[in-house]
Image 1 (cartoon, rainbow, N blue to C red):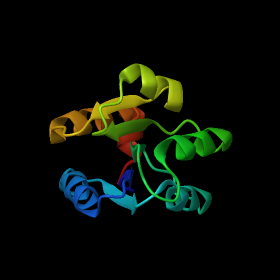
Image 2 (cartoon, one colour):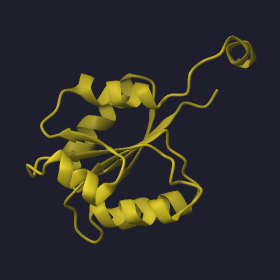
Image 3 (cartoon, rainbow, N blue to C red):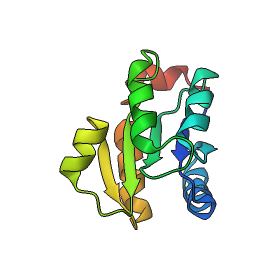
Length: 133
C-alpha cells in the first residue's frame, strides 16, 4: 500500500525539515518545495499529495500565486490546502487571497497540523481494508 504524501511549500528550509520529520514519524511520505513555482512543477510532474501546506511569503512564486495556479489545474484543484503564516494576516484576508483553505498561524503545534492532515484522509471502509495487503 502506498503511503500518502504531504507537499510542504515553504522557503524556510529548517521549518520544512521539521515538518517533514513529524510527518515521516506518522507514516507519511513528504515532498518539499521552497517556492510556489517548484511546487507547481511537482504537480505538473504527476505528484498528487493528500494535502498541501503552503507558506504565504516566498521568493519566485508566493503562496497566493501558487494557489491561483493550482485552482486553474483541474486535476489538482481539489487537493486540500492549509496556509501557514507568521505574517499576522487575518482569516478574512486568507479567504480573500486563497479561497477555501485552512489557515494555521505560525508558530503552531505539531498536533494542529496533524489534525488537518487527518481530516484530509479519505474514510476507510471495511471493503477497502480487506483489499489492502
